[in-house]
Amino acid sequence: MRERWDLMTDEEKVLEILREKGEMTTSELEREFNQRGEDCPDGAVRTLMRLKTRGIISGRMDPARNGWVWSLPG
Image (cartoon, rainbow, N blue to C red):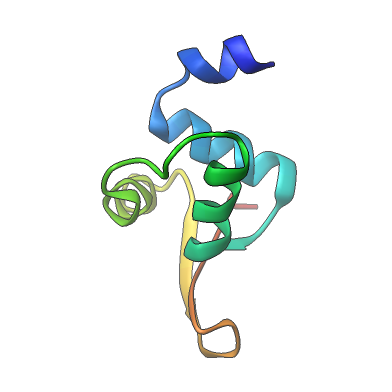
């Protein structure tokens, strides 16, 4: 698993985490990256917004969770 993770792009890593964990806030995604032994990708918000703009992930502001919530569409 670790070798595969090391070869993935930041975008692929975000998608993998969302597949495994489901809907997550930006902070939760950053914590997950840290738990996997690496810093959150440079420009995490930029990466998330790029994926959202391309329709690959969904993102919405959730006041109850104090931030953006990200998920895979469908």
